[in-house]
Amino acid sequence: MTPDQVEDAFVKANPGLTKAAIAIGCDNRHLREVRICLNKDLQFRECGEVDQRSCRRDNLVMPPVRGGRTERAAGAVGAAPSQSAQQ
Image (cartoon, rainbow, N blue to C red; front, side, top):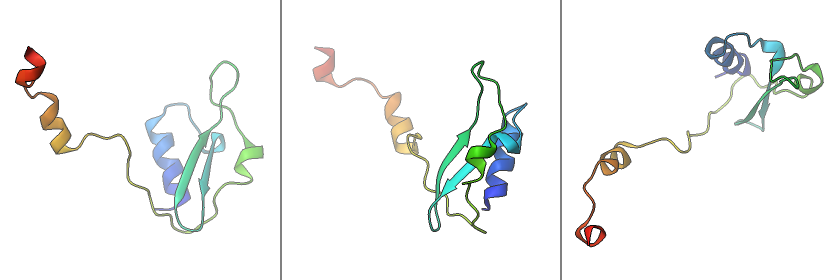
């Protein structure tokens, strides 16, 4: 995935957000951060000063999503409490 594709995905998912309000951070190969610039009223704003240091790689490796529910964990959420918890 390219930095432009990451920006496009954020713009598509956030009405009012423009590519000028996003800065993508990366290391040699991996996406490290996505910065969204906001003003004091929490409205999107351009952030050229941040975007100047934005990632310029041709292709990025996306890290795995953290904090997501796995099938195993999703099944455990609805499980009945153990007998020791019921006592």
